[in-house]
Length: 410
Image 1 (cartoon, rainbow, N blue to C red):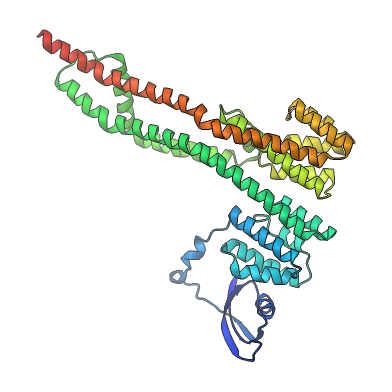
Image 2 (image 1 turned 90 degrees about the vertical axis):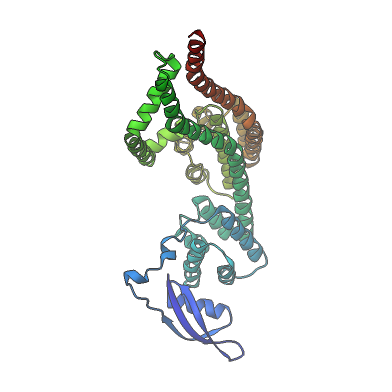
């Protein structure tokens, strides 16, 4: 993206000037003409490349589009296309109103592509980091069927549902995360600041052989105080190695499988993934996307490599001519009730409706589990905190009781 200075005349013949950020002079001219302004001259603003003239804001400009911005964009496109406004005019109008820099840059390129004769789905496909394969496929189907406004409506509804689910998960896990962080911080503070003070007291009173819990706590505190640089480096290296490993194909597959086996939350993540699979697959079928292409898109959208592998195995079975019920049953992803619903949908030709009911079923379960998540985790946290408090109390007060008893005897 570059900045361009323009001189132009409006519809009244008056001279106007200003600057626009765009990908090319042609894009600037197209935008001005769409506003009813006739460009006279367009010149690129050349900035010095000196290190002292670096635009720091550009370095920290967000490159991702927030899901809420994407939902708003989809809703606006639905309203504009439904009203019969041309796509170039709609995109040009949204360029002026969007608050997302990354989305604005993408829309600049899309606007230029549309003016060059490229269709909307192909223009969107050039920005895979913003528009998913699901998004592009629905736009493609909407363009070919003449129901583009319905495609944008479906996309907006789907993204809103995904955002609500994501927010519910964040809300349910916020309390356990804060409590866990507080516990870790408390343990570190006690070992670094509190225990050494008690050690000095015990040494001053010549307490002799200290109780086992006290010796364990003192040893732990000494280890942390003496080797904290090594522990810090080891922690950083371990976290860095782990994050790099799960970015690899094999590591991501392993991590995505392990996440589904976590206590308490594993089942919630699993049901949420199955709800996303069912909802997405239903949308694809309802939009007229062929089964094989639909399963390919679902495998990319499901956001879990382990589940995606099973979805691809379903696709391979469909390519061999097998029924959806057979390939779904073989993956062992679904309950017998869900398999039966898929079978009924396949036999009656209403597979999209049955899959939507499956999605509703799993989403209701996820919603119920999220509401009960705090109730399930709270007893575990209470027991854990109680255990830590008990160990600290025994380690600190047992030698103090012994000192008090020895003082009374003497």
